[in-house]
Amino acid sequence: MKTVHRLERPGCGCGENEVGDGLLSLDEALARIARKSVAVEEVETVPLQHARGRVLAEPVVSATLSPPFDNAAMDGYALAASALEGEGPWVLPVGDCIAAGHAPGGAVRRGSAVQVLTGAPLPQGADTVVMQEHVLREGDRMVLRHRPDVGTHIRPAGEDMVPGQVIVGAGTRLGPREIAAAAAAGAGSLRVRRKLRVVILATGDELRPVGDPLAVAHIWDVNSPMLAAAIAAQDVEVTVSRHEGDALGPLRARLSCLSETADIIVTSGGVSAGAADLVRPAIASLGGETFFSGVAIKPGKPLTFGRLGKAFWLGLPGNPLAAFTTWMLFGNRLLECLAGISTQRVLRRHVVAGTMLRHKPGRCELRLARLAGFDGLGREVIMCPDVTNSARVSLLPLADGLVLFPADVESVSEGDLLEFVQFFEN
Ligand code: AMP
Ligand code: MG
Image (cartoon, rainbow, N blue to C red):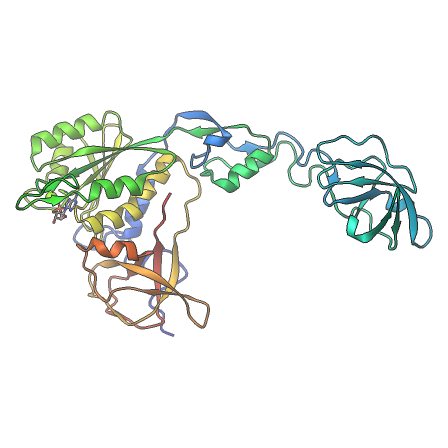
């Protein structure tokens, strides 16, 4: 098997920092986003049932022992195994039945048993629970054939959590698993960072809202609904600003206005070097900063990142496929940074090519790819078109993610390793 590129480090192996033409490598661009962005400071309290998708600002700490008391892990009989004399079988009188949610009437006496249902508090004196399937019940007595081990089928108090234990760390995005743990820890409400305010502004004289009639030279604005859907998340308030044409004055005015309230302005189009590419000049004329402009990737080369007032600005290319892939890679990273997420999702992994694929050396290429099962060695296989047509949005619904072709690779053989970035929906 030929290995296309190193496995011992992340990234596509397309160079370290500047890779010529003033372009940054993919990894350096990601690193710069992380370095420049600052998490929002404001924190709010939300009830647990509204916490899904929010980012914890303070850790969830267990308030009590969990479980709070020793209890039965099975339907069965609580008894003192250590008090059973001689060799069995033993015939034991059976007392009351304790169900979950009910306090025991009293201690279990030596040489007798108490019926317990799963979750019932263990009566005092009992040191084991025998499964009901393992005894013979005869009226108010039961026959026990084998000596049970002490401690069996008992969930001891605090076996899961103890008071003061950190159950979910700050900076975690809360999903069902974290919410389960928080509930068990007794956290009825949680301290989370405030929602991020993201505004989308598509630019281009040719754009018309989707569904409007198109005159000559007009196209529908794909990026606004696409980005709104890609950005939508429980911890984000997304606004779509009406698209803007290619004229400096109005663009300037709109950006200035949006920068007053947004945490992130996501523009699409108008960031290349053409005469109608006015987003960068507009930001500059408003006193905004550009942290980088240009990444050595294809599609997505014009990607620009900067700041205007308090708002961060991500300038995506206009081509919808380029806008989508750059949002997926860089926009999501920016969101995570501003949201204060401490552990990033691991979305990059190695897969193998299902067929021979060609690549024009130059820039690192992000090609749409579909997961197509596993090969005989258990490695995940991807299939993708032999060439990329970055203007074809129709291929997006068929793709599971992007496969990265290192800049200097001319072709990839079937079975070669490639880096894959999985798409995800929040
Ligand atoms: P630009 O980056 O502005 O040079 O745009 C690159 C290409 O993407 C052009 O063909 C534009 O017409 C197209 N484009 C720009 N914005 C959008 C959009 N919002 N929806 C669909 N296509 C767009
Ligand atoms: Mg344009």
